[in-house]
Length: 323
Image (cartoon, rainbow, N blue to C red; front, side, top):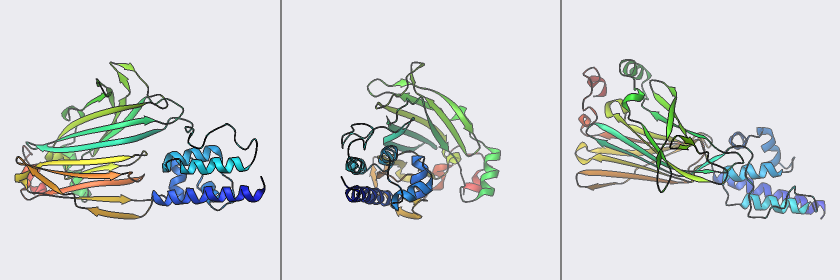
């Protein structure tokens, strides 16, 4: 095949790549960070100064999740170079895994309920190992910054009443049909957050998540409402296919709920107003995000018509600040 055919195939690859990068709201720099390539290399690919490699194509397919369209264009480009154009006989629908350990969250269900002055938080994640190396741990975070918009008040608050791992009753399980307790350890502890490392095992025996395998991780914790704050935020640090955030409050507290999506790579933000459904003295809200953007923040906030709902058992030195 001639160079013209090869150039045309490379141009088709670039068009597909650029289209999906824009679809995911991702800059060239962000794509470079997520795929492990230098930003200048991504720029050279899109400007036609460099031709794509198999490793580059497999990594951007993983990050941009184009339904194999990017990979199909790469295969067409590799075929245009004639015999020896590809290192291995990969079909147009067989996307090879990226080198190293890579994790995709296929589904995340996050829920928060206010019960007797305590926030009960539960999270369920479907994990999929898509790399070439097994995964042995997964890190989660508990955020408790009571006054995110007022650093001075936040410092005073946490200095008096820091959150400790002993009071949150943290629990985690792994598995689908017969979930088993997970071992875990505190990776980092600060006044405003706790990082917890979940060890992928079963019954105390390490069970790595091998390439191609999936599993379900459930974890939960409890935080006094006066310590937790009035927001729940999910930061998308791994490719995520679906995100659902649910809130459940006593109807008598008169909650007002809204959500914000902030994408730092696309320099944009959007506000949503989840609809509430009242039933048996409770009011529930749900926010569903299909294919949330990488490095974006999805944050739900709420205010109560009756602020006493969040002050049950709060120390006297907190009440003036919270009100």
